[in-house]
Every structure is written in C-alpha cells, then in structure tokens.
Length: 215
Image (cartoon, rainbow, N blue to C red):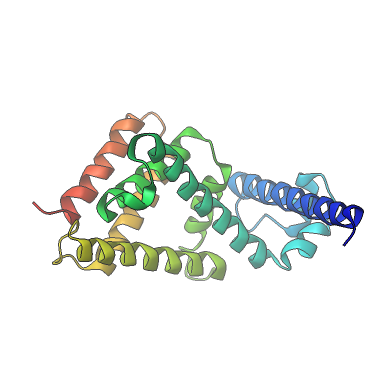
C-alpha cells in the first residue's frame, strides 16, 4: 500500500470517528433535554450539524445508536475511575474488588454531579424510560443486564480474593449497588441543593464497604 493510500485511509477513519462522536454527543444532549421518545435519528443528525441521514448510516437504527451511547457512557466512567485512581493507587488492576466497586460508584456519582458527561445524564433518562410497563427499550434493558452481571462477577471475584464476605448474595448485592448508584445520581440532578455531593459519594462508598466487607 502506498503512503498516500495509507494516509487517505487514516483520514477517512478519522472523519468517521469524528462524525460518530458528534452524533453520540448530539444524541445525549437531545435525550437529556427532551427524553428518548422525542429523540429521532433525524433530529440527532440535525443537532450534530451534519446530514440527517448520517445517524442511520453509522448506527443502523435508533436502538443501535442507543446501544453505542450507553457503551460510550459506561466506558467513560471506567476510564475516569482509572484516571482518578492512578496517581494514588497505581494500576486499577491492583485494587481489591471491594475497593474497585467503591471507586467505580463514587466516580460515577462525581461525573453525574459535576455535569462533566452529558452521556451519563442521558443514560439516567433512558433508565427512567424503562419503568412504564408499556414502553420497550431493549438496548437499555440489555445494558442493565450486562451491568448487573459485571457487578455480580466483580463481587464473586472479591469473595474469592477475600475482600468481600462469602455470605453475601452476589446477584442481590449487585442489584442493590445499581439501584443505589442510579437513584442517588438521579436525585442529585433533580435536587442539587439537598446535600453536599461529596458527603453523599462518601456515604455510598461506606455503604458498599459495610454491606460487602468483613465486619
């Protein structure tokens, strides 16, 4: 392959990545503002300032776009957790699973409360959209199932390494952690002056340590 062809391919890949990033950002903004039902692929393209047909080209469908947006938001939380821990703790892989759970939840809450990530707010809005029995949002339900499974597996790993009590039911504890994190995040957005966000984050971490850790 010639140098010019290689450069052209990289340029095309960069343009595609930039286009997808703009569409994900636009989708998050719209969902956070008007909800999932009033957000369409055409409106996402318009908000992003590019062709209205581009969301369908990149993601195939609205469910495809939602799935990518959720994955992007979760990835940002993990990356932010790793970045926050690196100066003090070193490699995130060296943390006990109990400490990792605390760090992930506290970082997630900090991201939501600070407004750093519109994607996380959009995920909270989509989570709420799954509550009505007549509304179907398979991408969000699937993402929640994967999140629950990942948390439960982390808890089981913690039980194996000894940082988490073996008597704890991993599936039940994972559901508790998800509910606490999501509910706290949602309330922190709708009741910003109700409590000191730092105190709330620390209490959530303490709850995880108390419920899962050895007494």
